[in-house]
Image (cartoon, rainbow, N blue to C red):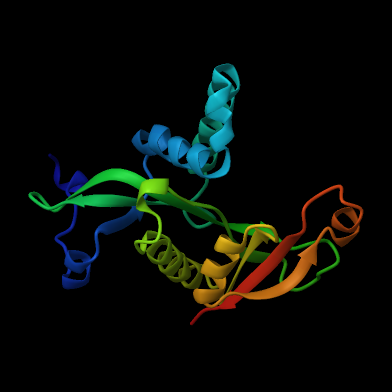
Length: 196
């Protein structure tokens, strides 16, 4: 193994945690796609052709985003840690952070740090991986010069909402209030957190 590909030694905190957080690599695409499908589209497996079509689409989307400059986009993965070697094991979670433009009616700031696609494989939920991913995105946002992070959560997903509130996120606004009021789209809540 070359020095560039060697993984850093585990810190004491890493030894206590069952997961390691690192930047996603192209070789992680199949595993990331599997975690996203299991988290957001579990019913897709019932229709084989739909499942494979969605798998290809998600994988190509992420592959394209991975080519973005690291100063504007990062995809992180949570991996298990192999105790015998302290190397990263299987990908069990993912999150993306990017710089996104604000809505047209907001003049300042023109961009914001935005989280998307936080997903943990069903077998590894409620073990701290999501919290570790969220904490790592805070460091990235600060390195980009942002002191506030934003994300959307569906109002009909109380588990995700509770996770974000526990992590310090607070409601900022309801997205698409007219469409959700007409029943045409579920309510999406915009949450934000001040980071320092």
